Length: 411
Image (cartoon, rainbow, N blue to C red; front, side, top):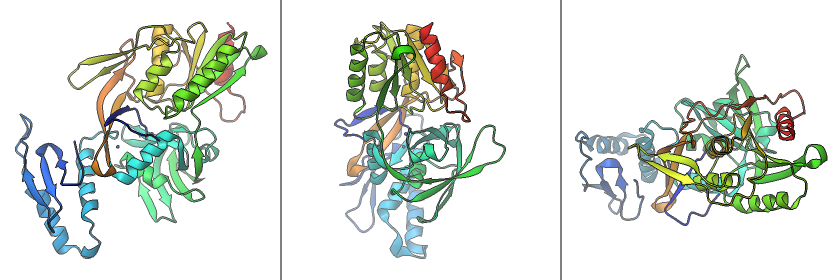
């Protein structure tokens, strides 16, 4: 689910959600309401018409509730007008019914930026939704979440943090609220009630938060004579391209390499342009991914021509924690290169979110399109199926999926 955004808009697959906020005022939804906070009571000016075909909107109900709160609420002195408006905007965006379309108040927007930078305090999991249920997309390698035994595909049913007074079920929860409840200062504990496929009853996992610095790319040489490059793409972030280039250069300098295993297991995704960048290392030309908007119009993103690893036989390792941009890379390599996919079915996140910066430090992540593999496959909810299914057994230290990939390279 971490950046300096130099432009107003960046395309994300995060996983980890047009309003312009505060100042003279801001627009609220389709109604085009400008709210002026310079007076003791906000004034509303209707300045835009509803889109054609929309029913007439009467906004008096909003102000009726606003007035009643300020008139009747027991602890009026605790009412924060800014918090009320943020809540109203969050509710409006949540009304779209898409868990990945979210409004982020400044504090949550800041955390999203930290995530993309790869340094933050928390438990080290990427979360998203399977249907409407909050789920672990992937525990990050070497983090408290992995040490506590959380696994990709676990459903999070309840979040408890006694020190912060949080006891929250996850039915109907939005992503920023869940992230806020799970994340916290290093050294503190959070308890997650999870359900897991194959385990009859939900169980509680206690995780002690820590400061987490997540690398983007790792490289090792495996197999007989260390003749196979095991290239692990752990995340798509701010520094990933630079780290990737360093590791690819190491592969090209090492003599006797038979093939490359691209490992995107537990990689929850990131920027669309990152997916195109990395996939382009393995293919010389062609469409890496197709983007389709609400009107059915498609935009093709083609290989960038880097193609430094095209001469090596390539295997892709993936699992339930491989999501969005990771799935784009895996799908492109199979469709364009015939690369075998080994492991388990991926997470299945087939939509694209655009990150928009708003005034006051707030943000809006809005689902703008779906993405398709070069062959036109939409992975949403179902994921990519592996060509060779191999489970990584939890009761052994051996990496069965990696061993199978080495065998296939040797063939």
